[in-house]
Image 1 (cartoon, rainbow, N blue to C red):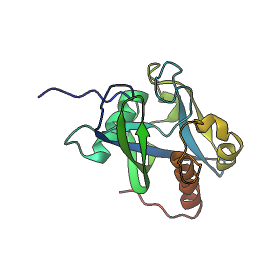
Image 2: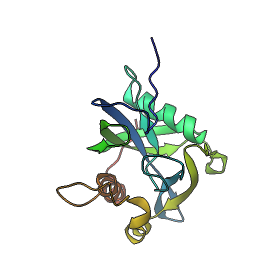
Image 3: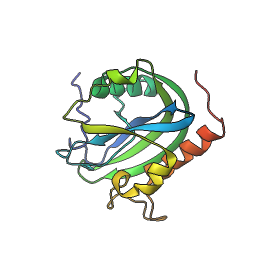
Length: 174
């Protein structure tokens, strides 16, 4: 069987793609923060945008296993995965596909000073508070990538929802 490439620019015309992303959070001095890497400027799809890390799930692969694999490949880290709390769909015009994205609460297992970015995927990372997400919206939302009905980016809205659930203590780890 041939392995399918799931890079965000690899053609997949007319196909559906399943993606899993982690709302990787940690508390710093009593404040919840979210890990967000910045997509490399060389990416054809959404270059230079901060994102929730994760990626495409391989055909037949368990979605949580796929999320853990993507985090290991892109960041050199392992994660514990909690409950899923958001999902949405979007069109990837570069790839020609329709994507379904599922967001899970997650935390790094190793110390955060061991994060190793793959420069083909990400150029840098930051830890964002909810207020940072609100104040720096233009850095986490690509203008061309907003929902046609609400005018908002679905990943941005899901990120805000994650903070609300986190602050309300409404998450569990398995």
